[in-house]
Image (cartoon, rainbow, N blue to C red):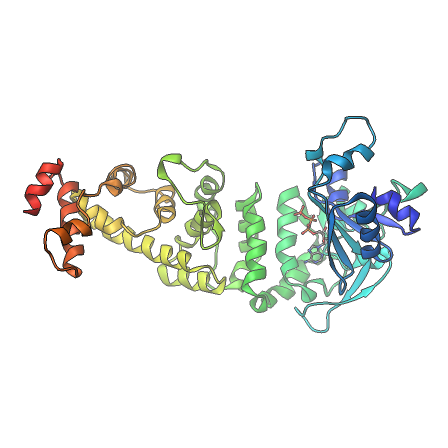
Length: 418
Ligand code: ATP
């Protein structure tokens, strides 16, 4: 549809970047970046007028997102291969971009943007393997444009920047280079490695948000641990913060956090501090390997949310206090663990505990944390007690009595209270 519309407007249109790279590598990809040599917003408006959906456009960048989630069922009627496609096969939206070139006024600045040809648009990209373009309009349908040697590097398995200031323009590309290298089992090309060595220190100036975005992407990859190992090897983690490191011996733990299904019986929350649970656990497992001060310093550098800082502290404390309790009463264990995020306790479990401590943790999760007395604040009020801090004390003692088996029935609870 886009190709036909672009042809009608006499505008060359291309699908570029990751989709073409993955097509050649025969890896499935659902990531469509469409570049128009001309005004992408006009093309998107024509598509919206003819086929429905709606647009979100940014005139400064000449980009438009064509949202088609509510018209997908109608759109498949226009596709070839009678009934071959299902509405769910179509993406929810498509990004249409006007071919543009970018200038960086100073290192790490946001780029200044100008309209350009497809060739220059491809030149602003990170690596040659991401610069291939497939043309879609009219008789050019299927033509492959390879201005910057992308095909050669794909064949050789090389991750190569397009020019020597690439990492100076955008130091996050160093992290992207590692991600692509490890994902495809490629090698970062020699000169590109030298440029990384020269630009490493620039990571100090990169904002926590941008770094976290790149690290998040790595943690969603199958090869996450290999990527972190390579970041460490290249000195990129230490450039982010001097205490930030990765050791291969942490691999299994990280992978179990990222891959193993979360146990339903733990009733883990879906997220903490706006981070999905799995990612939260993975970062915590990583940061809790460091000495406490270093873990907190790295978490602060990356501006992790408060629950992460609290969990790092809680886990460090539990690691000291729990082993120090010899044959503890259940109430002692509960008093140590209550108030700590279950995600932090799960990270502690994945980290590996002595067998006796693991049993305590399991007992806490499956039984003890759920034990509460029948009596509440209102009952104490009815008994004529003046509301105040004593309430909490009495209720805690009452709960402790249940936990430690001194009370085992509602009658015994009443007796205890009286
Ligand atoms: P993935 O398969 O991980 O989604 P992708 O290649 O599709 O990788 P995106 O992050 O979706 O990458 O970006 C789309 C395209 O935009 C890339 O192919 C790349 O050419 C370009 N790009 C993305 N980030 C940068 C960057 N920091 N610097 C230069 N070009 C970039």
